[in-house]
Length: 403
Image (cartoon, rainbow, N blue to C red):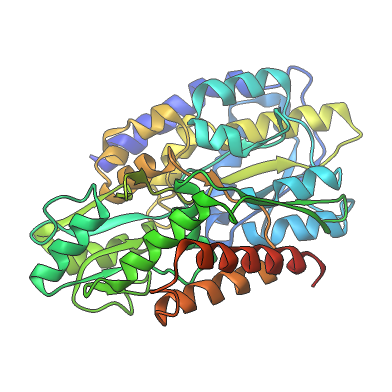
């Protein structure tokens, strides 16, 4: 079946390349940065692209290994020597735009991106309503893995905790992590985002954590931590006696092995009547500013192709990658839909917020708040006292901008 799918994908990819081609062509050099494990895949896709279009036959494309977490820093530091096309994580887009280190997506391609990719990924590639990058994946975030012989209703946190406690099993959520912790605050409608200047320096904190909404979120976490089933953590490699865990697609294999025939996954539950939220993560391709219009057209054509439905699906099918697609049609492929973890993440991403940039001090501050919850220091605090805790939290988050 996989061999048949691979043949079909190759045929469809060749037929669909016409929509990404520039009649003008280009015969110069283009450099691409992608994650190390995606280099070989990308090289092969570039060759497929060139073979289908004689106008690009003379184009020399070099693919180098630069991780999505490092690419933006390298581009901003030295735009001139940076790759023409580079993969990066969505939390770096604001810095790239402010540093004028990324091109606006070509208009016709932007329309296709808007129409063909899921709303979360489309939102993630925009700043101020302008599209600056091509979405490549929708596969970074967290959701619920659970043992369906233990958890009878995965839609409600209180019921999950009760089921796990009754079965003598553990429920894991990493409350002292700023990445996971926001699930409760964002669920209540709270905001915590930072703005930066063109150099990437933090200039403003936008937050309403110190509010009734923030207090409600904090009380939900305190209540969760009081459960006899609760354990702090987010990795199956260190978890024991698991009934359910909030984790990501990177632990899908471990979850399958642990739960066996009882393996299941779904979006996060509601907590005290509100749907838990969180950060959503996306990988994308950007193009650095170009002075040669023909080269820019070639970069746009190549970036659009490398993030197209067919290539996203091929990337998922590649056993060395298996990246979850952002393309709506690719998400409906039977092999993708059959992936329990990706389906759960896809459902959860509808409730998440793309992760922006956060200073190191934010993460430390969030860890401190979670540590106080774990130490049960806040168990007996009333609403007024919890509001003061959150005022201090916000003050520390503001101070983090200058650290």
